[in-house]
Length: 282
Image 1: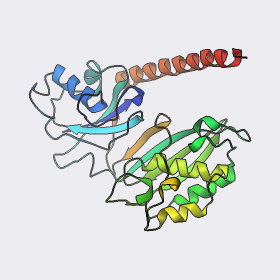
Image 2: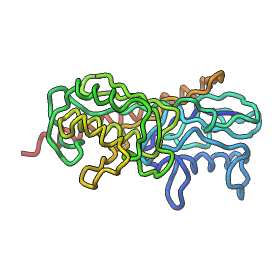
Image 3: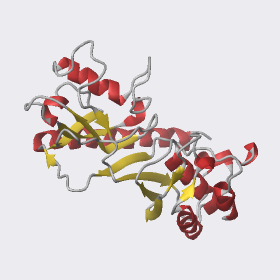
Image 4: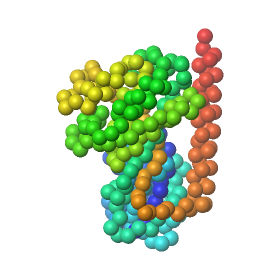
């Protein structure tokens, strides 16, 4: 049994978990294992397989973690030989047969890169198109109010197992607020809806009291529903397993850094092109 750390750019995938007729990260990994003849062509999934969690369509990851039974030679570098550039294995750990990537994770950490120029309005990412500036102090207050043990049934499409205990914090980095959300586990879309609600409070589009209403037993009326923030700025940054140490495959990690650095340059170039077009329209 071996655990792998997997990084991926989720913008071209319909989430991590397999779905019929659409591209997912998990299908991509299984295809690579079939190419390596680790997974039989007619097998549903590898023996001992589990994953740390599901990420939504468009969400990326630094430390998604999977486990499976495989040969000794199945290293991150070997796995990357059959994976597309957008999906990279970069570290591994040998684990015993009882290890489970989902159930043995004690904490998951997500980061959300929220575009929030200080003192400037940005209607493009504001729910409902409300054109208001973010107030950092109000955002921090919302993060504090949203942290702790609550029933988040109004912030997820799930209809059971909605009691969670997240911790939210935010750090300013230039024009962005980097929002860090940690918990033992998350309901569907919870992180993105937490960010959406904190943003609404920070702009004045919602009051702090709305957070208390969201925790109440009654469903929020439709016009007060909390939509998820866009998926693309969200990253599964870490998954903790007490006592488990991962070994970085230096060749695989170097390859992964090159891939994502190239993607960073491509995105910056795309932003400059879009900026020229936007600035040139009179």
